[in-house]
Image 1 (cartoon, rainbow, N blue to C red):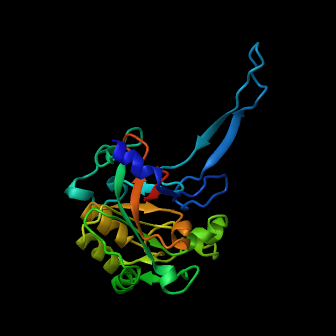
Image 2 (image 1 turned 180 degrees about the vertical axis):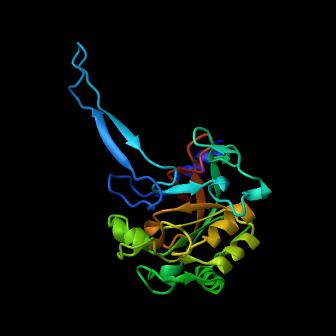
Length: 266
């Protein structure tokens, strides 16, 4: 145990979560983030002069920086493992819920596609290919291994304070943005990664009517997806390999959960 503490004494921690605030970006088919104080200081005061403030928060399971459970998608009426969902509005999806995801402590790898192409932000139509991934990894001197959490940086985290631009590229039409397409998803699954994520709203290149990357990773391969990450500090300091630490909330039957992930570097 002491060796672990000695190692962590010199560790650097990078916060990979985006802040939550009223009006923040959210996928159009998902509920928004809502926040309000429902008790102000002074509303209730104890005889000794003490008071407290308390808030009410409403949000969807796929709000902000979050992870997709395997129950998030189905295709042809079945989820991962060929199971038909057992589900209800009151109890969620009984199989593969986000509450079945253990706390994550795994090797993380960032593939900084934006920097590799000398761009601050990838354009909305940019489709990430296996060849681009391999070129970037070679330049970074990093390899993807079985069980890794692989994160793509597109630069779109810079738009987080501009919800319309983050979600639709500024077009106010439909979700639009860069990301991997099906060939890149198959590249990831062939390496048996644990999860794949990015700094965008939808992870995969959108618009994509049938969301083929989500189907391939979640339904066909059992690989989790993480969205709305903030990878800017990692990119600025050229940190491409790290310990990825995160835990979803234990939301019984939920298809996703907000979380606050960290990259730990010693």
